[in-house]
Image (cartoon, rainbow, N blue to C red; front, side, top):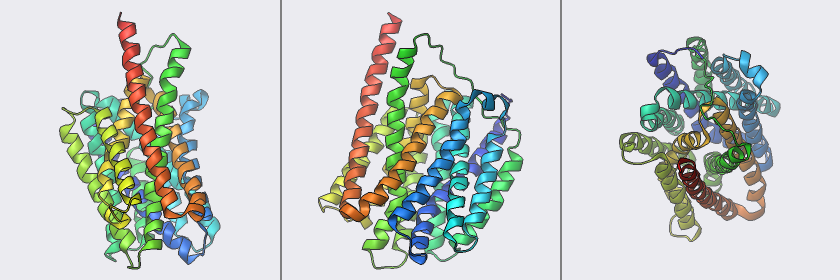
Length: 379
């Protein structure tokens, strides 16, 4: 693994996360508009999001192929190029096949940059990874806020934003060309069964979390567009959602000395469950729940740091966790695309609320088991 100057890692990590934030903040809105313009069904949109997840799975899963991993020191550069090509393709004409080709390329860019920089930040800044990891992911939130805000204000179109992502992704590809994200696993495990018992619940947790996050961020624009009459309400909602997302991640960075990563993640999951429950009983309108972005902002970066610590760290552990997360991000929107026409908005919210509650439960049980295991080892 190359020695990386901290300023380069910080600079290109922040730029990369702004780009994937722009892509995520824009994607659900852009595809909701495309679905209307091209008369595509919820199942078609679900397929697009599934292919996006598949692209992320391929680039992340490559870290688990030992022969490929030994020679692949350019994952960040490859992911940046994929993000650039996908962003260019998605705005080329109205042919649906072009959108489907763009989807896995965008996913590869998102998954590769997310895995690489999250793992590097935890590794290189291990003494304060919770703080810097939240700052890194707050820059993701900045991009996710900017995209729907620019759209809602009519300052830029979706096509122009994707063109910007395409160009700046090439800058990241060149600037981060020599950054090697391969980090060895530091855990020395002699008992294979014990390792499986530790990693399996982490994979389940990661799957559930990204099922939840992708389900909310990809489908909220469509749910809001279907239930609201005012133009631009979905874009305004998503801008506010990701505004809260950024604020809470910066706050988490400041509070990381006193609050554990596990504590942050559990607060986020419980908050999402309670918020969706309030919508289902009619206490809060869905259009008034942009504050749930604050809860969502607490979940994944903190859970990822907790999972790396619990699972032994390193690129291989991170790849397994993120591959499971990507599976959740792939399956979640696709499944919800089939559930929505059958059970309506309430069924989608019920599923997401249950997934959030289940993820929190698995995390608590896993942490208790991990503490018990560490106690036994120390005796």
